[in-house]
Length: 325
Image (cartoon, rainbow, N blue to C red; front, side, top):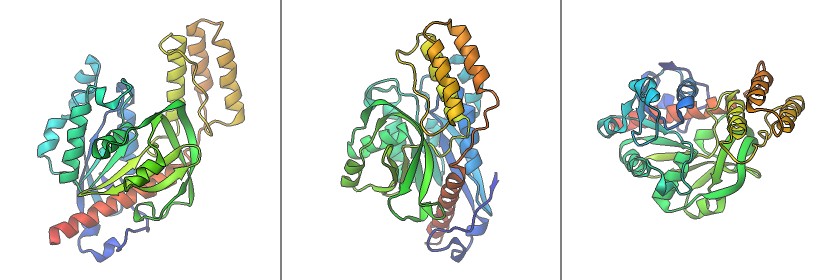
């Protein structure tokens, strides 16, 4: 995969470091998303790993301790290496995704011990690692014993986030940017700051969004999902409503905040009103019909592209420096 880049640069400009513009870097993706989201997650992150003149080799890994269906293990996971192969791999940058929560405490998740080993390995063996959503919560808990806190209801939608600090990783993005969030738990901003995390973007409604910590590796944490495509929140909403009408969850989900226009919100609210009296099959059919042809805008794509281009250039710059030192 060859990737494209913008004119924004990390300081000092990569052009001042010989070899950056013809660099090859290896990025690992530890994909812990549910079976139905595996391929979409590959496409989303793969589409963001683009920067001019930098060749990106993307390798896929999975945690065998993440619960999977037999069909998933027999099909798409065949293109993934088990995480045990990560321990002997040469990786420049690593991305670790979240997973659907199954236990109230992260330490009770079946993959907890394996995921914490990934955290320790990444610090010693990567230039930088990105931790997404639940993976961010797990890494912070393991590193600094900071527990995530459950939210009263799911934080779900697109929220305006503002730059809380300047950093080269957010070079070229606007002062205020929309970011999708989809989570049941949160890390407190003040507690992060008290443990020497640098909060880069935040929201009055969504809290800390992106934050960093420079350890042996540059660790970058996202509570939001800049990688999401325009339809991801819609798919999640339809999934959650379907679970409700099938009796697989107790509460009817709220429409995602700041995502649909008023007309679409009204359509989905009408379906909500019908859900108490009509059979599940009719509600599922109505969801499918209402979801068809919706032209949802990916208003966060430009910022996501800039941030990941900056990250790739950082990886390339640091790799050259380490080679020359």
